[in-house]
Length: 113
Length: 124
Image 1 (cartoon, rainbow over the protein chains, first blue to last red):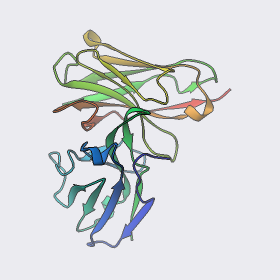
Image 2 (image 1 turned 30 degrees about the vertical axis):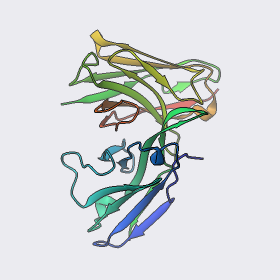
Image 3 (image 1 turned 90 degrees about the vertical axis):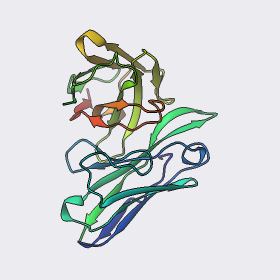
Image 4 (image 1 turned 180 degrees about the horizontal axis):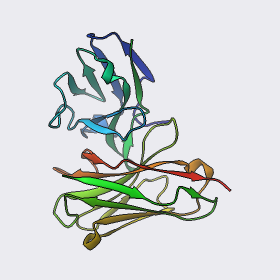
């Protein structure tokens, strides 16, 4: 069971907007640690999509955006395209009595209808 | 251009020790702010962080796996090595190494470049 909770799947038609949530707690996202997002196309390594909650690396289309509020974060994809079909993971840092770890969400599979 | 490439055995037996090497180019792990980490992904499952080493040779490990992991670096060879002891079939996964170019702390920052991964199967 992942420390960060994501919906297992989301879907949308081409051109639509979808959002993927990442819910944490007071020991990770709520403690102020940044959230990062990765896109993993089938059979490939993850690729950095959003860093520092809302920043896009060079080359990532502005159709992808990130936000953070309280103990949660969200990834939004507008103008959905077939090539966006992939798994998406959020990542943060968790510091609690039980340890200090880099943590990932369980991943969300995006299906473009 | 920054690249990372993982190498190691594709098959290990239960109880054996796994040794993986990450060979990288395009940056130096002796440069302040640079870090390399290992992450794994069992087939069909989520990513799991394993370990991280920084430019200053500070090492960080997953709380749940720290008794089995050792990470080290050879700056002259541009390599980071991960060893995992007492391998079990549940350790079957694709193992990735990734770079962090930190702005605050490597444990808090994003993995900006990933290797292609190497699949390790644990079976007798």
